[in-house]
Length: 234
Length: 305
Image (cartoon, rainbow over all chains, first blue to last red; front, side, top):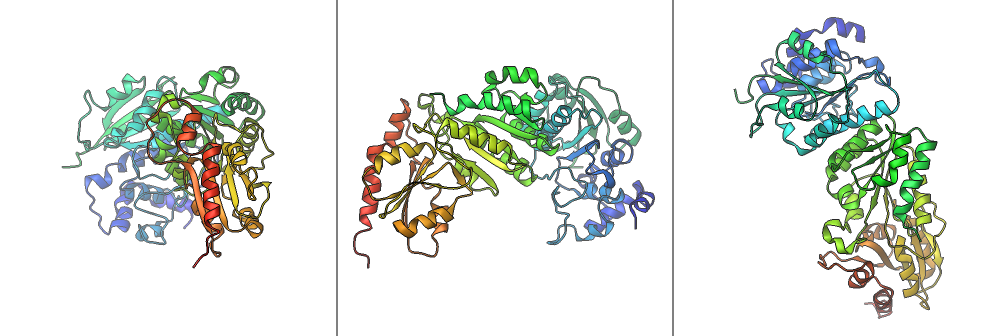
């Protein structure tokens, strides 16, 4: 199957089946699918990426920092033709490129390897700086983190730096499934706003709301979208 | 004489002018030397503030876009504090950087143990693929810095210190250099320990090898030296004692040999004072070294069972 056929054949409604190839189950708990809608809207309508342009310096960069539970990510990458669908059933096997945490060296389309929490946002800051230093003004950098992952101090180093540095090519999606043990006083968006970021909070299952938040202008400032989904414990 | 660290900003400033691929990442420490460079290259001289996890993570992000990041702060904050970033953001992502440290094992003894990092090279030894340079003179530091920046996407650690030998030697960034030849043992002096080692071995019939680059370790040259001088080997390192005994042992794995690792002792000293006082306390002054090297080599003359 060619990539074009893959794009035509696989739509949003195919994702549960693709995830089922990895888990043997087409019913997925909220934790497994918490990222699914945000990932789909990004890859389907926002990111200027594709399997054929992974070496293109002008491509957008998407960094999956929340590397735990990557089935939704692999399903979207398969739906968009970055990885073959027939890789999915071997998820986690010795010979499979698809681990329980993604590895950029093994997974076509993965910009970083992740799993240990709190690495993606600092790397994304450096990626935005590196693109700017080379005069690459078009590519946008996106990083996806979880609300509990936000607890890691490394993220706060990155948030506190990126606002004053005016990294307006930098975008963060926080998937908020209320999994942090200690709630953030004032909410997640307030933490970013205090550091000079543009921030929007939306229903993380509402594709139009996600799209509007992802594409909202934010001149001179980095942008965060907090995507609220069902609590992990629900 | 200027220090290795005094060379860092001026040399980097020239490299920033010459090579658009080079970027410098700082976390406040050392920023004063880059005032002019930052004016000329505002997007390639980056100070992230006192944020060492971001320092290394941002360096990795720069490398992912194709730049050559040079990341600098004190060794404690460059290797030890953000060690997982060094391991994952560089190693696991399969990208490179030049990490340039200052303060070494005890460059500022009055600052106490918070600013000492005698374990930095041992810690990097838990990772794969790092080149480790330990220059013994500012001229060598400059040469090795230029070489490290030009080394493609390699992962390179350059350890700068105020400890220095009186004169620099030509360094190639790879091989051990034979400084003296003898027949009763081999002493390997690493970086700034060479001066003390030469003084300590004056009049002894030993081969002295000099290492300004310790990883990868040039086991071949060590091996060749033992053919004439025997397989009693003493390593004298300016960081944690025994850091290189494994690599020396690997080079001699198939022949009977003895290895003595001298360096900074593991036990925290809890003293301030001067660099010289700390060298003496760790047994790394010329007098102590002569006693310890001489004792080890003469012990091998005892009949073996």
